[in-house]
Length: 254
Image 1 (cartoon, rainbow, N blue to C red):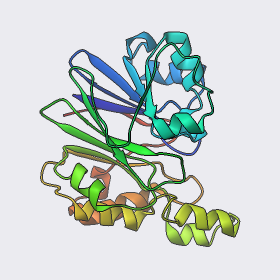
Image 2 (image 1 turned 135 degrees about the vertical axis):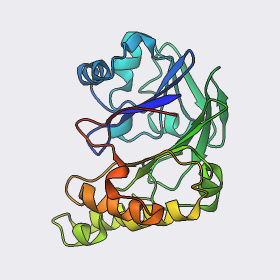
Image 3 (image 1 turned 180 degrees about the horizontal axis):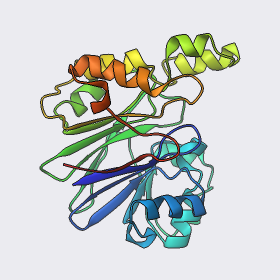
Image 4 (image 1 turned 180 degrees about the vertical axis):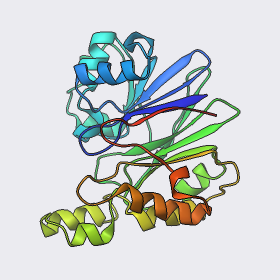
């Protein structure tokens, strides 16, 4: 089992996971040409993707889905609430599946567990992907942790974890006050310390990879995000991976 990011941030998100004969994409927030270019960087042909799983309806997670999935006839999966929020925008796709926010979905060599999360969307989810031997947890857009989330991701082998903002940088920055409140609220995004608290609350004994993701380009810095997570793990900051907006990160294996 291995995974890679095509890019992570407010301008677009997409993450690849593969095991055996199955390759899936979580979110498709880049335009068609950009998605293909980013896939080429990972030596992946678009036609080889078996499914796209959408976390929620915000443009940076779903914006490229219609064009990319339509061109390459890739089945798309999303929650009932996400589909409802889109008002039919993806209904012309060849295959569009819906699920509830606690669904366990079987794709042969991969199983995908949906997790309901607090975020300002209709029925937002994040995912734990497993090949039976290893588990990857992906949490890129959540405003706060919950006991259910922590229970579901405990004991995972890899974690892609939102570290969206540094509170001081956000509140001393140029964003309008209502936007600052939305970002830092329970239905917004995790700040560095909240991400660290989530990490501290779970069973970390199997972790081989921890990746800081969805960093704000205006309200955070990679060094701050890495330091917050490294303190929990008692590791060097440079052991913490980074999913950035332009490059994502390359393949990592479990």
